[in-house]
Length: 73
Image (cartoon, rainbow, N blue to C red; front, top):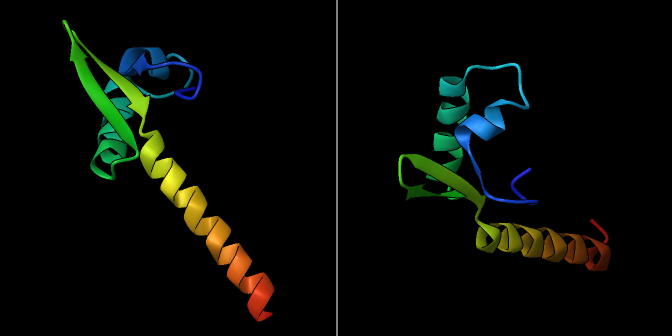
């Protein structure tokens, strides 16, 4: 969902069968892992994907895959 647009925890929670505090807890964990970014906008905290980290992970997987093909592992 965050690939489509930035969202608040409440907006995200509407798509799941969990409480808003539970969604906020999970988003906090993702934020601590640097996978999502958060920004306060007035009374709301808006979450977005940290595309820099995602690009690094994708690059790592591509390099890993390339190494396996070349090394025959």
